[in-house]
Image (cartoon, rainbow, N blue to C red; front, side, top):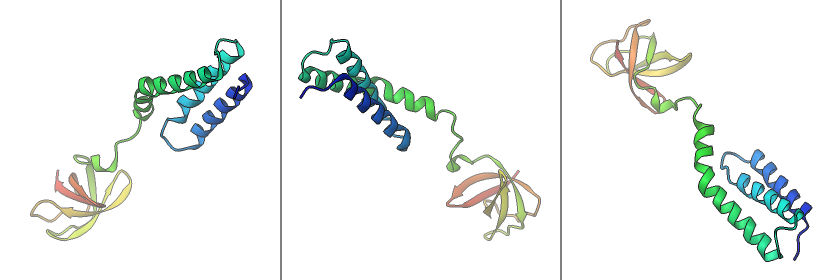
Length: 144
């Protein structure tokens, strides 16, 4: 089946639109760009028979995925904040006394957390502490 150049272009734009509305895989982008490239080649009369159009589409898509997906994903995710499990070493302020072996409250980055003492002593209200580790939503704190 012979596909007109404008059909390839429509498919390409449809795949690009699908990439924009789907969460973070960065796959449809390469298929959309490949369809657009094949549409341009068909319009210029350089694509050849229908089997060649499909072969070009497949090759462009796979080459694009292999060469460009990883760098694009890395570039777009570079500016994200550190995940929650990377809060070790941050400073927290005790909001409610934390007895040894008990729990209390601490504030970290403007949010209230459950807190436990990683040491033997009491953590007093207003005391600054370092986050030693995190278990679930509980901070294990050591006095600064």
